[in-house]
Image (cartoon, rainbow, N blue to C red; front, top):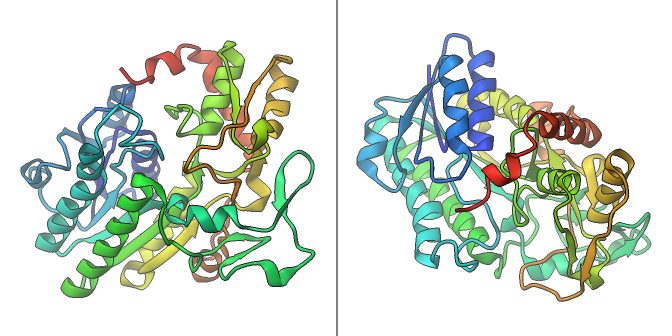
Length: 357
């Protein structure tokens, strides 16, 4: 079996490649990356040492993809994952769409020509910003939490267990979220039209030791490293309280569910929420308290101004993937944070290495 991973030198792509190389010992694992993300080039040597084939190329260029050769499965991990992509001045809106949607269309053509299956890594940010902001929440232990006093107030697809696959994806969801919804739709259509196995994994916040975190993406890694380095930090929106909550997922847990999906082959098709869930969820102020215990107290600024795509509480309900594949995340958020701290001690310059040029 040959497994191809796009964005293979990114945090998620590289971790999946290493994990799947171990889990499928007879498989050939290969991938492509344009090395456009600062820091991504640091992953190339360890991938090659592990026996993973790495090609330099861009998914926006079909001929680059064709240079990979044959494939049985493609895992599409190539995307700019920031909710601010296309509006933050680092790339244009057209470039954002070309990266995140145009690249996926090329991947789908690649799969069609080879009869290969596709695992599309999507995101919790496909869910409706308006609907997420309307969830009935209270503040509990310095974090937004579900108000379960009136179950009738909860919309379809949301509960104290988190946001499920049937929750609204009505726009606006950000340019990033929009490209991922469109990618999901096209993947489903290609799968149906050309009889390809298509798996869509909507991931929570993937995080771990080698992540290239920024203030807009990879918040757990970024916050821990910035705290330890004495860099300025700010609670944005929601009154500047830091009560907003996300759930953390380690890439080894993602690899576990992807392994199960690949082994299930055509029976794995569908849309699946894959996240840390309520037990792995933290608010920013709770994360700050965790950092203060390890690195000492420091001041965090508050900016009450609400940004267009800010949401208060996004926790993934993974009931369906548990029922279908017997999967639950096994790495607690505290262990993930400890891993980031250990990595920071060895690589204190990591934030500067991975900042946009």
